Image 1 (cartoon, rainbow, N blue to C red):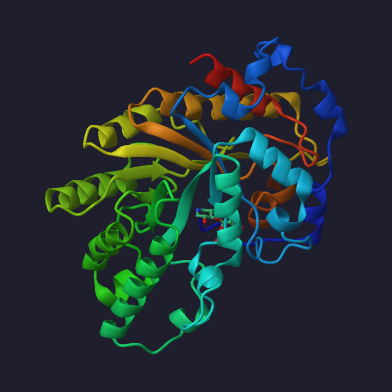
Image 2: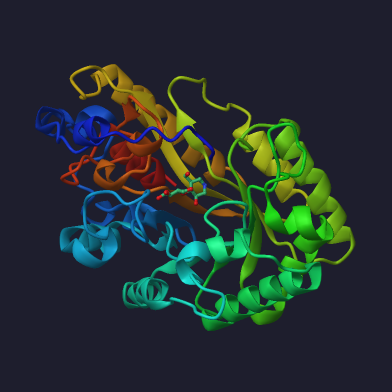
Length: 371
Ligand code: 9MR
């Protein structure tokens, strides 16, 4: 996403307030949960076999340096919920260029290694994020004075090194992230495409495939939930690349939704057209933000609308063959990126700051349990 960055202490403070009254009032029965489902009490245990329910793992220079310690490495209750509820994890920042490759000749694998290790211990798969992007690149790269040959070699070396390191342990890689604008043009701020031309995208997929032939390689973007100019651009590009034999295996919609806008009702139709190309599809970063009332506490109606958006996104994915990976972008408001990037908005995840479950949580769980 490229929202305006309007982080203020006041907004962060609102986000960190736990609306306990609502935690208590979110009775599961009232929200369609099926009582007595002992074995289906977590999202992962409710999910049908072979369907991965994931979350972003908070950390890695979190949201432009929020005033709390690194969530994944320092918040134990957070890790417990992460292990109990999810069968897939996506490093929120820890595999991005600026974090994992901070200097030209130095990698920083510690945080990514820890997540991959954690995932193994907890029988979780990992979504790697991301290898070719216009954002969160280190300064040495963006400000560097490289020839096209050098840049190409830098990308090849990075992809090979990172993908090989986790080979066999990453289920899906977001190889190319957010390469198109809303009108379906290639983004000129993407250093790789700008300096090396669009052909570099195919090379990125080829290098990733060579480094880990088992990983499924994805194009990932926001604003592509519907059939629109941007998703059309992906459709055309992927069709062309596959005809040329480029190893592209998947297309994913991030799904950063807002109750300000209507639900993208053609999500299922859109995913199905990619599936018809022989691709896997996925939802990779779902959250549903809302305008917070002055109290900072969402109303019951807002929470119901949010739950509805979560449920419909999940249902769309469940209805598409090959959409087996459904990831929410963080599970607790405590560490959500939303209030940091969107002034006055928040409460976008399925749990309150204290991990109390919102209607959206129960909506996801009961939808999974019914399959
Ligand atoms: O959640 C991430 C946040 O911590 C970072 O500060 C931000 C910087 O761009 O990136 C956020 O994650 C983004 C993801 O990598 C790609 N799609 C949009 C996500 C939300 O901005």
